[in-house]
Length: 592
Image 1 (cartoon, one colour):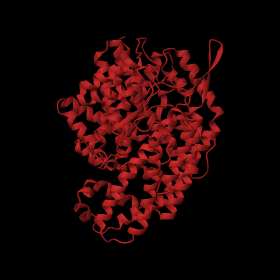
Image 2 (cartoon, helix red, strand yellow):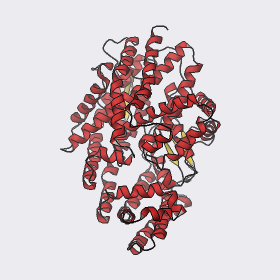
Image 3 (cartoon, one colour):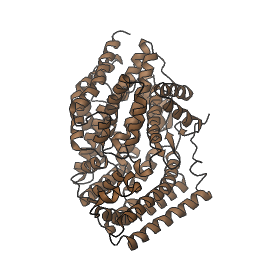
Image 4 (cartoon, helix red, strand yellow):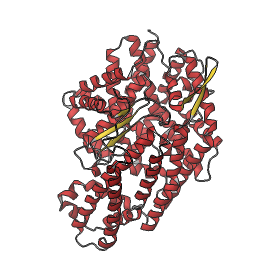
């Protein structure tokens, strides 16, 4: 059974003819678009024909770009020091930035079409891409001139992108020194992080303290990367006329402030109940002052909830199939065709992700599997992302670009399928353990995500004035954790370095990648309630809903599911299901 992913479906290697030919074609297509824009987009004659050419060129360019960039980034995600990968990543970033000024001109030209709706309606191709075209018009309001856009893009390759690459290298090669049986051993960070799920309290505690201590070796470099990326984001936002990076993020997310405010209101209201879960868990583990941070993922039962990768595969596939044949077949196909890179290893980045590859109608999944039930849930989560991409395979690439909040819906829905199935099959002690996993994850997505939102808000505010020192960043993280977790955590054992390895803070074109997880969880809860009410018809409706996500605003997508995300009561109802789980957990904790 393969545990390393196969990338040959993209390219055999950086040296293969296919990679080199596509790189040449990509470059040639960029030059063609640049020349065509300068010579043809000089007036508004034949607008329909020109706009059709633009859409066709975008589709062709996007296919080359996706394959080349995905192959390079996937290689680097498991081999951070791959010299060819580092080289081609820089080459591809430079080629992409070379087109930035031209894209600004194209966007401006489209925004100047006076009777855009009539032009779009006159063409089948344009009608199919109506949402994409109208979104360009909205974005054009924040576009700068050709030269300015080109300068920003070129500078980013040696600015924010370079900082992100540097941070990724630091983290992927970072080692944690942990004492075991009187002997100090070095472990990759990904392995040390997995120790948080150990059944041995001493292992969890030693790993936490060793992890915290280890960051002192790289804290200055990672802080410099964080300051560089966020500083550039603030400058670019100001140049584009956004009030803040949050406003830019909401627009990119196709989400309005009203939706965010309604969701955050419900989340804040739920904090006391979730803290009561943390305090009860602390009591069960023998703590009187709240839960130490290193015990957030600690098992509360001695019942063995370990899963090998093979057992995890079987469990996920079985319960995906119980939901729908299509979802089950998708998972089996991913396993059989080696789409997953499974275990931690030196040079591999931490965490997990899914990379949907529309150009070849496949996906690739990075895991750091550690044989816990939580790792099975992570596998289900990432496969959910992949199934979302699968449901978009019949759309053109331009109609598959769904926003961040909706990106976390299918993944969270698949998590829910697996967790609910596990509880049904479990005895009382196993159900208690699974319920703890469910609440641990929900706490992360509501409480910890809220702390990350607070932290990033503070980070941007302070970065407007000057770069932050390591101590200032650490204090901002601790303040955010105190506000979100309250008395649920032991104030003596928080995590001042949670900003170091979390990749979300270092995305160069996406910021505030925190609240989308809460949106995904709570929207998925609402969808799951609909599934329970209509188990026969829902799976088909669900796939149709996912197919809409690349060509609608969020509020319009949710309306298709009869959900009003502007209504705080929807969010309260979704959170109510989590609060009921807290009550069940506390009740069970006195029975077993």
